Image 1 (cartoon, rainbow, N blue to C red):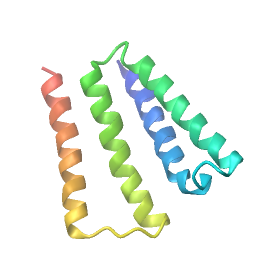
Image 2: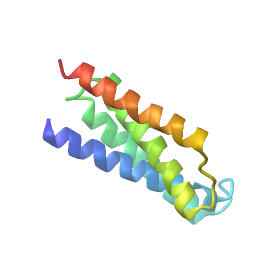
Image 3: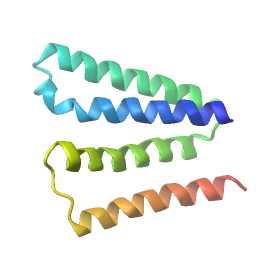
Image 4: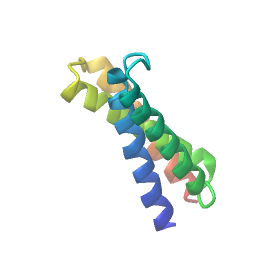
Length: 108
């Protein structure tokens, strides 16, 4: 189970990295960055597929998508010049709360 959690964390980091460089792909016209994005997404999905052998898909996907969404929003704010107002931060907190809630309910 610990190994699945580590793989899920790696999948999230790879997916977030691919999403963070997505603007550089310029609508998939820049071949190098496009390959990086597609390779990152493919690797992330492959790792997620390995994780769901050991973790229920509802939990694994909720963590993968929720954590990824929150991390991309933070990276976009810190490095890509996007705004992060109170309303956006509140709803990101709801996503994180939902992921935590799913994990707690799945643990029983």
